[in-house]
Figure 1 (cartoon, one colour):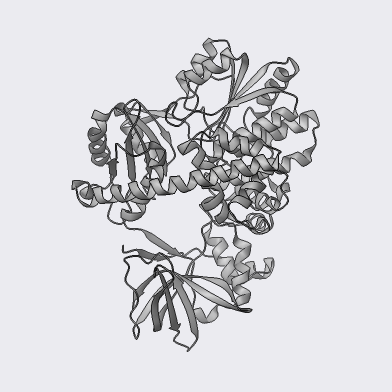
Figure 2 (cartoon, rainbow, N blue to C red):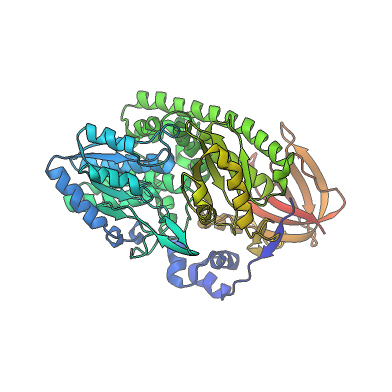
Length: 571
């Protein structure tokens, strides 16, 4: 697929920034490209620590939430946590449960079954909690959209505390948004318009952590225990793909650093089961190895399995549970590959190919992997994509979007065709009647205004930088920019007129491109590109332009710079 290459054009005194913070001017340009303007922001980005995190007391009603929790603990009331079945919900539930136990609470938890219950709190879970004697429900990573469900809990005389991070739901009336929130006793969500918290992109575990931090302060509990909760918050922050900016960046840096000495037996066991080095865990390992194992429980079994792993203190038990999670994830991968191929084939061989918003119906597909498959479809065609599967009642779907298309807002415009929906600008979940799927598809495409430009992926180049300028010292500096992720993408650079001396596919599956390139000034470099299935390789003897990221490569004791090709074109 053809990509647009664009170069950031943000201005600043890069030399002065470099001298002030002891970094190369290239580093200064990258940091400026990430939207950081003043010295305070740059210093927090490069050197921010746990002490720079925002006060939890700034969260609207966070102190009031803790007041109620302490009152319930003092009165011996049962507090019931209702979480979610993804990595954020799993970590949020674990943080609240362990924190409340440490505070002396009578507490239990439940997570909805993805298929039987669907997302978030519902009447069935409320009835279970009520029948088991619970006086109070506290949600995590859900609840902000559960208006009817929370009203039901209130009608039974229960106290309801909502902790969430999702967008505030709204209706469109005469083209205007009318926001609506449940009538809970407390709502703690930084996205509320009247919340003064300075950062609204926390994940659900981040919000839960803030509540427990206040609880620990008020009850003068051992603050060292908060380190384990911070690790869980970091795992959720990466896994939930929230922006790695502001304090989320600090959360992840701090949490990853402490994983090497984590006191959480389940985390240690899962790292071992996945054959990772506990002393070198980075954001990639969480996002693509550990996280999917935790998520697999909610997809193919019950998320309670993952919570049980994170709560256990017996290592043998933890290893058994961790191995089971890894096996579930392998099964999930196999299902994903099968149905992703079917989804792509359906688009390519039907009139769907003409749609700018893809709605694919796979009735036999396990609904738990619909979101992952939607991501694959989006990646293949670079269009907003929703994959719908047959459910116990009607149909359920999950969507993944592209920049320039706010999926949550767009499906909200078609809310009359849906039974339930929620999400973010880049992802959404829906439920609807099967006979309304085609109407929903047509409505989405009728209201979309995507242009050819928006439907063409854009690669943003941080610095047009000759490969001659890149050395080991500069490449090592880029480590200071980590962790990479949404909102803090890995920087990429570009050079042109590179002569292709050698070009070949290597590896067991011959899907890795390896090139020898010569710059205009005669410097020879090695460049590689992964996932080359079905792609053209550069011809030897021709000149190319290359978008790249430099890596350190160590082989037989020799350390060198290796260039990872993100994209290339003939000159």
